[in-house]
Amino acid sequence: MTLPPGAERPTPAPGADAEITVGVGPWAGEWPTGEHYDPALLAEGDRRNVVDRYRYWKLEAIVADLDRTRHGFHVAVENWQHDLNIGSVVRTANAFNAAAVHIVGRRRWNRRGAMVTDRYQHLHHHPDAEALAAWCAERSLPLIGVDNFPDSVPLETYELPENCVFLFGQEGPGLTDAAHQACEAVLSIEQYGSTRSMNAAAAAAIAMHAWIRRHAFGQSVR
Image (cartoon, rainbow, N blue to C red; front, side):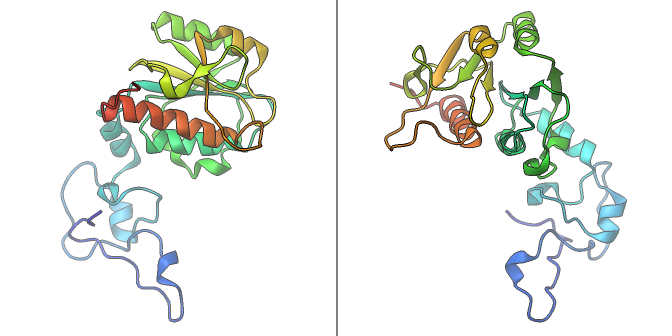
């Protein structure tokens, strides 16, 4: 992506690998005008993990701009064991501009893998799956689980609703019984190797991208 006109990539130190240089340095020349620009970032540079079009923007300005184009799916994750995968799921939800992220269970969750992308998401907490299901019902949002159960139906042929909430379990145990029962449908991802299940964060990314293919690109499942 093209950098803003006054932005310059920092020059790596002698002998340093240019590939590890992150972000942009201070704005070169006359500063741009606009309430969305952050004076501190213009003066000091912007090293955040954001796409180039958001360089030097205030955090709240980025969130407001993302809100204009957020997609119709939400992402919910059960959090009973401080699972490391939750951060990765949140980061992927940001990449696909999910409507919101919901943490189910413990309020505190492992943010390490999120790479601070949670700052750009709308976060909700629900004490359990029943509370999440009630929140969904109040807004007429289907709750759709993703896991390998005998009653699961294939994600590959399921007609995903434009507005919905995906619910993912934790690494290892997967969806709890309460979460399973709360879902309108549970989807499975077809596998062809020897492993019984795939990484929870990988499964979440596949499900979100299936929604993107169907509703952002208009690809039919048939």
